[in-house]
Length: 241
Image (cartoon, rainbow, N blue to C red; front, top):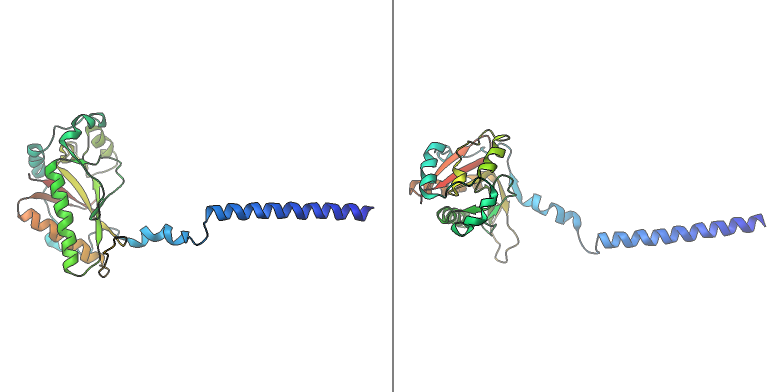
């Protein structure tokens, strides 16, 4: 009798374990679809990104531009909007601005202290930089890489918050006029999802100098002012139209 009871208990335990195993397998199959390489997907963006700590290594001295804030501010005040006190005012003048979104040529970073708007002149300048940069890569038979836009229009509130964490930020920022944007020079992302994608991989040194050369040409044409920032690795750029 005792042996029969033991056998029944053992049988119930085995059945319970079988049910749990089936349930666990179902959960795993739902979370990781068959044939899907999740580990590769999760690292794809990282693999396509060229990022250099410090950023300025290998950059030609010609491209370390020194157009200070006071110089850029004159153009910003001439061609820009009236500064906004807070983001609540952005909607009221949205019709005067161009919304900036990521494209095949550049990527807008996650913005914490600015909003994705520029004046028409600054928007045109940004797109020209992107077009000319891509053309330089193509001329050299290189793959397509995006540069990263890290800051755009700032309100007075944005500037106040930023000055608490960024030593480069100034009270009378050119960013408040919608004429100014920042492009990172320490980070580029390769694009391999386009149908006509082709070209060889580029080194960071080639990419940062292609960006610097692009900016120098437009700066020499009187299209913009450019400041090479060291604390925050970016080019600080203001349109002159």
